[in-house]
Image (cartoon, rainbow, N blue to C red; front, top):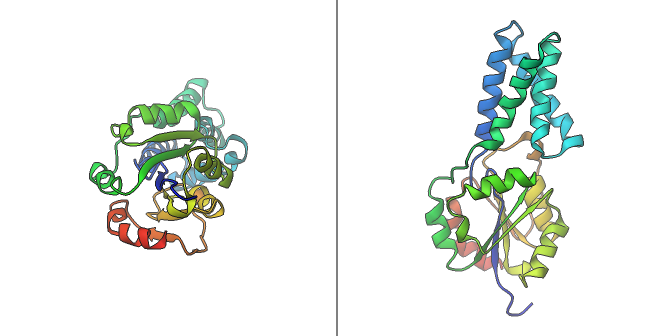
Length: 235
């Protein structure tokens, strides 16, 4: 693909902006609220986390999955909870998806540096309205030449994205925090992978990655600037 452009394709949630802290905050409020009625808080939290993973099989990354996990947990521990309590639990969970995003520290400087060598893009997975809401509140959105929202990221997602924009996978990289949703599909599509392995993501996304010749692990997005020379050498 002579002449094809080199790109950095970023994940959004927990890469460009933190969101796991929003889930954690809502969960903490929920656990305190339910445990105030008698149930053990540790058991309430354990059940909600387990139920949330189970519901992923049916609801995927949709907002209703997290809300349903709150409802089911409430009714497991307080089966006689009134309808208004169920509604409160649901709204507590859905509040996570209505908050504006805040970029990770130093993101503008990071983008300034890496954009000297790469075109920038975002491919983010999740429910359309949630991701659009987050992107609309993202102050640095204009820095990205292409943005795509998908239900889930696969190797075909990345292949199609590259083909439609004449992107050379051998010179381009996916930057993301998820082994499952970012690194493995990137590898299978022939792209490099920059794994922002801060472990501040959903447990379901935390699987082991077998490194390949264009895999780089960093622990914060700020480290992306310091590995730029390495990326060029691997491309």
